[in-house]
Each structure stands twice: as C-alpha cells, then as structure tokens.
Amino acid sequence: MNTYSKALLRFSAVFALIGAFIGSHMAGAGGYEFKTVHAHILVVGWLTLFAWAVYYKIFTPVNKVIAALHVWTAIIGAIGLTSGMWLYYLRPFAMNEAVITVFFIVGGSILLVSFALFLLLTFLKTDEDMK
Image 1: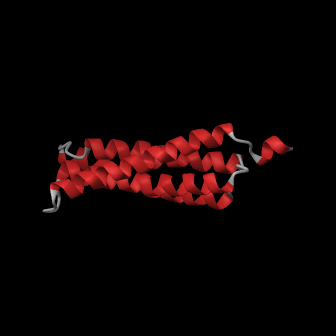
Image 2: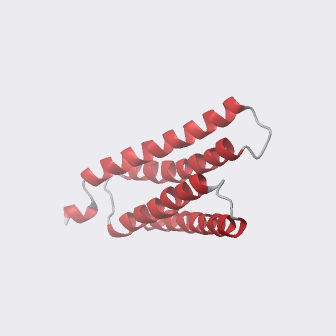
Image 3: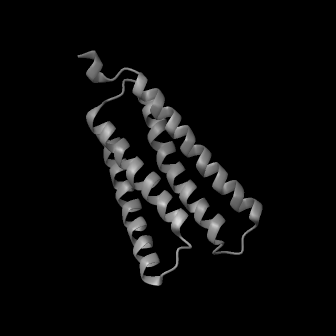
C-alpha cells in the first residue's frame, strides 16, 4: 500500500504546482477566468489526493482490489474532471462541444466512483484491525 500512498502523493504534488501556478497567473493578470478550474485542481487534485495518500500510509486495506480501483479511479478521475473542466469553461481548442461535455462528465463520474470506493474502504477491515 506504500506504493499507493507514494503514487497519490506524487500526483497531489503535481496538482499543487499546477494549482499554485494558475493562482499566481490569475493574480498577476488580474483575470479570474481560471477560478473554477483552479479551485478544483487544488481541492480535488491536491488536497483530496494528499488525504488519500495519508490514508494509505496509515492503513493497509485488506481488500486489495477495491484499494487498487480506488487509487486508479482517483488519479484518472482527478485528471479527467479538471482537464474536462478546463476544456469546458475555457474552450482553448476548437473541439466539438458534445465531446468536451462528455469528457467533463466522464472525468467527474470516475472521480465520484473513487469517492464511493473510498467510503467503502473506510468501512472494510484493514490489516491494523486484524492485529
């Protein structure tokens, strides 16, 4: 489970840097077009992934399949939601609106699955419960 903790921690650090960069860009430019994306990058990408990294550092879930699904849906969902949000709100490319909307919704849905799996993990046994 230490690999899960390390993977989540590394992704949270990437999100933290991106979120801080966007925040400093908004402050310097005086424009707040990125505010929604910035907030979600920091809350979902940095804080949530960091909290889950701490969880895996402290606890070792007995159900390895659910833990693996949780970690990968967390990473994929955080990337999908925030990049889909960026595409949806800022329209940086000439892409089909339906494709962007589906991308945004699928990313958010995968992240929602991750939250549900985490809830389930917190009620299941851990190796620490077995001692």
